[in-house]
Length: 321
Image 1 (cartoon, rainbow, N blue to C red):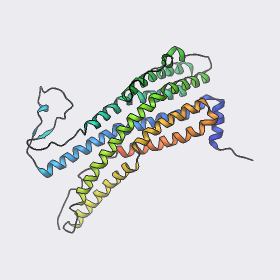
Image 2 (tube, helix red, strand yellow):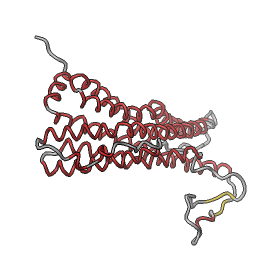
Image 3 (cartoon, rainbow, N blue to C red):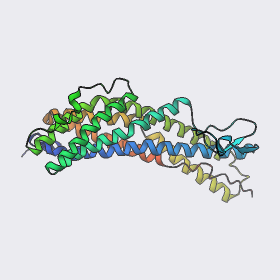
Image 4 (cartoon, rainbow, N blue to C red):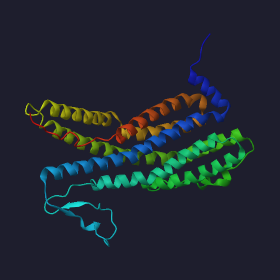
């Protein structure tokens, strides 16, 4: 007896009942959450790395410090940090380059619409009755419109789509819930396909910059940790320095193994595969499973890598014999 592969049997089931895309859409939505967390937590980790690096630089140089003018009561609101400032000399850069700041602003701007869209897709496929479906399809209709507008951040003109694609009246048709669920899913992913591609490119740029900057900062900190190591250190101090360096190497290697741009690109590929699968489940369902697995793995690994703190400067002890 010939046993068909599991994904082929699932594909056959999907062809007979559109309702079976529930698990796949939920997987896509969960991975979008992980990718979003990677962006937010990555920028938070990068800011922490920079602050720790600045403290080390100031401690080593020991310049005269004063309170920054923008900390004073009545100072105009700005994006500048309220912190110490160097009386004379170069102030540590806590914000990054202008390119990085622009990439950060774009990435953070598109995240809410992206997450709302992913949640709305899941809500449609999870709807168990007509009332839940009507609410979910309204959410999906609105989220597709918001998503296309957010995509203009990445590529001007991306929000120009057929008005019917986000017309709520056009989504609430038919009487069979399973078929309506499938029709709404199909219409939604088709309308969102181009915006998702543009948003993926925007997130890929931002994520790549986060990873590059964190790797550079951690690499330099490891160099500083290893430099004083030698026979002059006590065994205890040497052990502490070595343990600290190894901990930082673990964070650095996590960043090196992650694939920032690839994780964002895998989101677009998984969404493209979802579009193809709802159009022709028998032919394309296997490709959807492969694309979802790749997206899930890359988004999870990237989130873990970018969210892991580097503990900069923890091994600065230099006890003698």
